Every structure is written in structure tokens, then in C-alpha cells.
Image 1 (cartoon, rainbow, N blue to C red):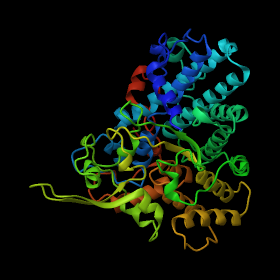
Image 2: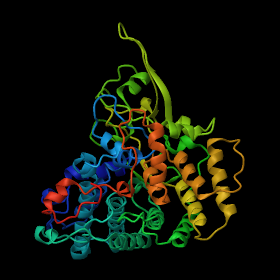
Image 3: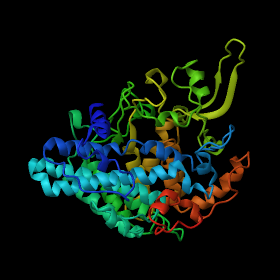
Image 4: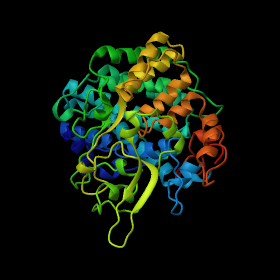
Length: 508
């Protein structure tokens, strides 16, 4: 299961000895067409390098989505941490390293996908026809994935669908969101029509037709979301029937299952399970292929409370705790809370050092300390981007939004999801849209979806403005936000590189 992650991530270091410089350019402001593609191996390495641009996606979602939302109260007690302005809705985050990474890493992936697609058109005859078709599908899936992430965070972004010279890039401004969506949808439709339904052996982990259909359904739901009067991801397009059709196809395929155990979905010994439509893969062992995301929300004290004096884990990171509001939404006995969160932990006394207790809640969903790697940046657990329970709950959302189906189908899905958390939960009889969004909050806690769900729902400003005074006991957050805060600023580095041709998003 881990072989494909080795392919993906070693590609970043080993790929393209003759064109490494071109394929490691981050923003769109640089790019040239390499003359490297001469063999099937060259194309394989190029595709793997494109996958490697997904490496930091989980960390990004836990900071720009989870930390931004009402799931985390990320106010530092030890100075101002780099992620705190994200949590606090600072209007000066155009220089944030996290905002810059979201832009540059996605465009790095887009650049690689564009070069690969261009070269498949020019030199793809060195490949067998079925291999060439599959590679095109994977490259388009990845390009759509990167652009969708950009639209969710920034709204309008420059649209580049082929390799360009630096001079050509300079002439491109930010593109209307609708046009970016047109490319995203076209790419995912093409990917769904060409990719295999599943893979075996070392190819497990590559994008499949079901991953493409599932991502397209998510795109349709996001595009159909509230507009708030801004150039954000929601365009009010009412694509719910189209999304529902895709989701029903995935369900009818019989390839995926609703696992009876919530913990089994995230088990280190049960990866690539029947819940997974698409994940990002990692391998531990001190080779630079491990994941960092399991550690970024927790503190040294958390690790030392589980394994005292854990070597390689004391790096000064601070806890980003679950909010009190989030904790209060779980019913007594909900296994999803105990699986995802450790509420309170104690570091035992050592010598003259007294015991230390932290009453706050730590995110532990992806942490199996017995299976830790060499450092806190070396976890082997894969990050699930899209899973079957999300397919079911997106189906319920489509129905509630008028895309077809029946209320009884929605209620059955909600009952099934709740009873995995609490076996004795009563059957749900009249699910509302607001209840569905809150159920998603509990089901996907710590998976980076909450901010996107809030924005899509149309209630992000109302919910956040009600939550801030409840949880912000330190009075460090802005007291209220506006629709302008629902997307991030264009990074200052990109404004400067464009000669300030790019417009900054309002409010920053």
C-alpha cells in the first residue's frame, strides 16, 4: 500500500535531472516547456512529481480550514504563533506563510500537470494508448484538484491551462471564478471518463473514476453554495441534481462501504479501506516521506503525556485545542468524540519537575503513538481526502437542496451515521439542512472540511459571529467578521511579482 507514496514523493527529489529547475517552480510567474520527455519512464516520473504536489495538502486544510473555523480556538498562550492570525481573522495575513503556501504549492502542481499534458500531446506516442489515456486522466484530475483548492481559498485566480513563457504569464490577470470552474468541471469529466474504477498493487492510491466523480460532486455542491456577494467559491448555480447523479453512481458501484467502526476508518493497519475514494499517501522511517499533519495541532506536552520524554517530538509546537463549542455538540457517549479528541491530559512528574495537566482537548484522530516514526514529522498514516460517508452525506445535502430523492433517504443516511457514533441513537425523522451541516461537523472533525462546509452553507458569517464571543475568552480574535473574510487575500509575494496587476481581495 505504501509503494505508491514512495513513487509520489521520491519523484520530487529524483525526477527530471534535465529539467528539475522548471518543474520545481512554485508560482505561475515562471515556466518553460522542458524537452525531457523521451520515454515511458520520463512520463511516469513526471506524473509522480505532479502527485507529490499534494504532500502539504493535509497541513493546509488543518490550518486554513479547521483552524479558521469554530472547531478550533487557536489562540496562543506563548506569544503569537504563525497560525494565530489565521485563527483571529487578521486583515494583514497577505504575508502569512500559510497563505503563500496555499497559492504557490497549488500552482506548482498546476504547472507540472500542464507540462505533462502538453508533452503527452507532443511525445505521448512513446506510451501504450491505454497508459497515455490514463496519464491524461490523472493529470487532469490533479489539475482540477489544485484549481478547486485555489478557488475555495482565494476566489478569482489566474487561469493557466498550458505551459507558458514568463512573458505570457505576466499578461494573465485573475480570472473570473466561473471560468476557473469551467476548466475544473471539464477536467474532472474527462478524468471520470478515462480513469479505471480501481487499481491493484503499486498503483493503489492513484486517482480513479470514482475519485473523479466524487470530487466533481463536491465541486458542484461548492459551486452551488451561497455567494455572499463576493467573488468566492459559491456561485448559486443549483447543480444539486447533477451532483446527486454522480453520488448515486458511486453508491451503486458497490465498490465502497460504510464501515461499521469509526476507528477502523483511520487505523494504521486498515489503510485503503472500503471508505476511501481518494487519499494522500505517506511512509515513515526517516526517509523524508512521512506525514507532518498528525502532529501540527498538538503540543509537546500531549506527546509526553502519552510517552514520556518522547525523542524527536519536542519541537516547541503548541496545542491548537478543540473549541468548547465543538465539544458541546457531541452527545454523551458519541464514539466520534473519543476517537478524534483527547479532552485533558497530564504529563507525569519527573524528578523536581511537577506534573502538568492541560484540561483542553487535543486532536488525536490520526495519532497512534505506538506507530510513530522517527520524529513528529514522520507519520505513516495516509490522509483521506474523500470518503464514502461524505458521499452519503453529500447525497443527503443534494436532496435537501432540491436535487431529487426523498426525505426518507436523508433520514436513513443521518440515522446510519449517528448510530455508528452512538449505537442506541434514535432514528432520525425530519432532518433539516442545518442539522445536516452540524452532523458533518461531528463526523468530519479534524478532517479539514468544516470551514468549507460553513462557507457553502450560507451561514458562515452568522455562525462565526455567534461563536467568537462564546469561545474567545482571551479577547484576541476580531469581534465580528464579514463576507470578505470568507476568502483569503492574494499573497503579497504574488501581488509584488505581478507588478501589482493583481487586485487584492476586499478587506485586506
